Image 1 (tube, rainbow, N blue to C red):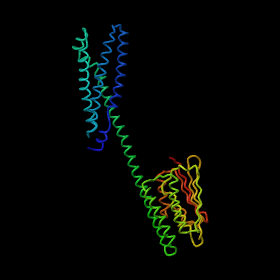
Image 2 (image 1 turned 90 degrees about the horizontal axis):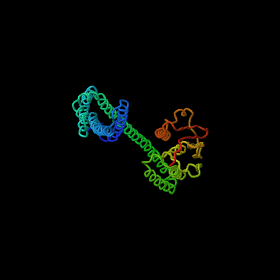
Image 3 (image 1 turned 180 degrees about the vertical axis):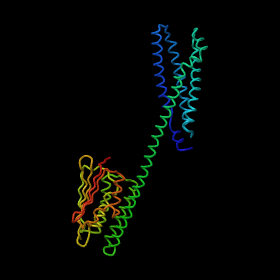
Image 4 (image 1 turned 90 degrees about the vertical axis):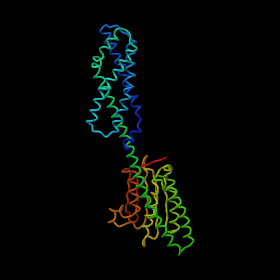
Length: 368
């Protein structure tokens, strides 16, 4: 079964049948008012019971044929046929259906009919049919048109949902790929730090290994989550900072500034750690043996979170300013992840302060 057939099979047609049935009931009510008014104007004797009986019979038969037309038309949707052929088939069906429709109406009406008018209706059936042919054909075509419209709208809706799901899956795959690139990058740097400490200070190296184990366990527990609470992100960053402070001791100072109004804010997972890692990796130099990093998370208005990672290190060369997001894994992946999650609704600036560098990010403020 093709994808279109599978999608059509999932769409119920009873809602459409009830809707058309309601419209047909309204039409019969207006027909009753027209016949009643015409009898009044012409001075004919009015038999309300007979009028109501005819309209009820017409309504019940109409709903039956509406159901048949809808289900038949649905079958045409499943067939790969040209539009000229489909139109020709429906025109033929319109004539045949209207004939059977009116025959059923007259036949049932005559079962309840009494008096001379009943015989007259039976003998002049063909003329009564021709007088109502245009209305019956229009009703058929109207039902067919509504059926095609209904199912095409439903198919379009299903396709949009399906496309949205595919886009979401592609986005999640892309985010997981970008995030997974950060893990080995961070891990290799940390292992290099531990290696450099083993011969110099075995006790501090062991402490770093224990901290690294805790950090990796945390990362693995959150590997499938793209968005986490700010508290969780700060816990991850604190574990990383502990590792780096074990390595650099008094040479590294970290200052924190977190707005208490952001306690329930949501943030991309592992957004902060690569920026702090970048500041440490590129901040130290022969002329900058001590490094201070300020980490600030502030609420900007009611709907913006501002993130600043600022250091007083060596900074970067001026010629690299225009290509800063293309040079390193940390900045490049952070930018790509922000773009994938927020589209154009974010700002990310990296500015050389001479000395030092500031990373400034503005993202929409989201909460639980």
